[in-house]
Amino acid sequence: MSNQKKTYKKIIDEIIIPIEKFQSDTRQLFVFIESYPELDPNDLSYKKFEISDALMINKGWTKPQKEISPEWQTPKYYGSYFNLETLSHILWFHGGGGNLFQAEYTGNASNTVHQYPFANSLEERVTLDSKEHIESCINREVKATQARLIRLVDNLTPFLLWTFALDCIERYYEVLLLDNKLPQIYSRCIEYARVKTLRSCGIDSIPLAKLLSVDPNDKKSLTNESVPFQINLIETLQATIKEDYSLKYRYFEEALLLAIDGIIFYPLTIAANIRHQHAMSCFKKFREEYQLPGIVPIGDTEESRYGQRAWFAFQKQELDWQVNHLQNLLNLK
Image (cartoon, rainbow, N blue to C red):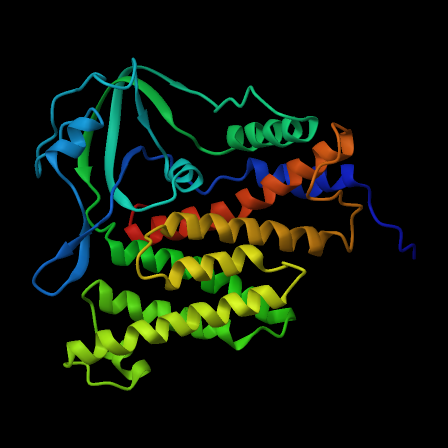
């Protein structure tokens, strides 16, 4: 039996095109308005995202009342159309948290692909063309001249969105564990991020108290012990990253740093980092069978274009899992 690898053109037909064609999105339409978690003064927790009439008006919308659909609206501030997004589009293009409104439109509407007309080099042109291609394969936004918000998806809370981000991390961590001996700091970061989320979102302080060996009813000790514990995790993880000159887990490690940071709230950026890490792993995996080009394009060649097409397709493959998982968490199916 020959050990000769299949050509990089074969991987497009056998692996990449099926990924590009697959869709997990239900194609429901939403408006996603990014905002920060709102601090509850009663217990200093984050149970919902900030939402105000001023924020809605700034985005050109009227906030829907409970059980009552507002009148059809026309754009006021952002050109001649509203952007209504699928979950796939939201996860692909956004980084932070926020409020999610189910929406619908009437009249004229169009699906458009983001254009990237300017490139500073041949290599960047290859990358941007490949990005345009994969974004044409993703269930994307609808540009509508008349639309309305039906309801607030009120179970998209800071806790649910952090849970989603940590699920993305843990899913990939379990994949890594199958073939690799990983630094213990990875599992410690995931454990801390989970219990910290329970505490900061007002769900349960006991798991964090157990981890820190303090009384869960002693809020002062819980806070005082949590800060140095978190700083130690960050410093240990950063030291581990510096020691690994191969950078083979760099996106995964960036996701972990975001997850344990107590200030920054970018759960969808975490999901994006995991998609990048998944794509890197796929290149390693499929090189055993295919003559897969490099991740970084070299000039505007056919080989470079195949490599970049595969790079973005592998990201979409993980995106499809993330969309399906978020739909399940939100009970949108």
